[in-house]
Length: 46
Image (cartoon, rainbow, N blue to C red; front, side):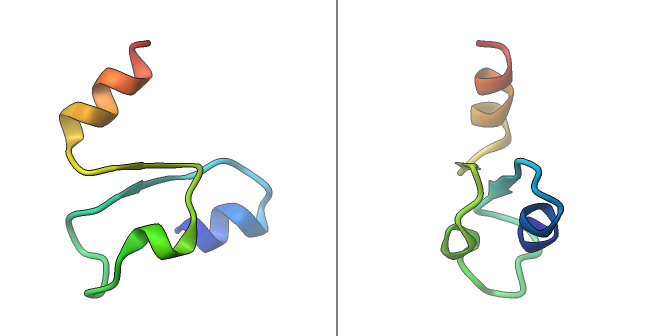
């Protein structure tokens, strides 16, 4: 999804857990990357 977002020139969010095909999502350089869902929620409430 990060690569699709980049191709469409839109921002992306990566989560370091879940179904990432065993790869580190950070290697795709999403605009934001979070280790937990609460971190993500906290960030969007700032």
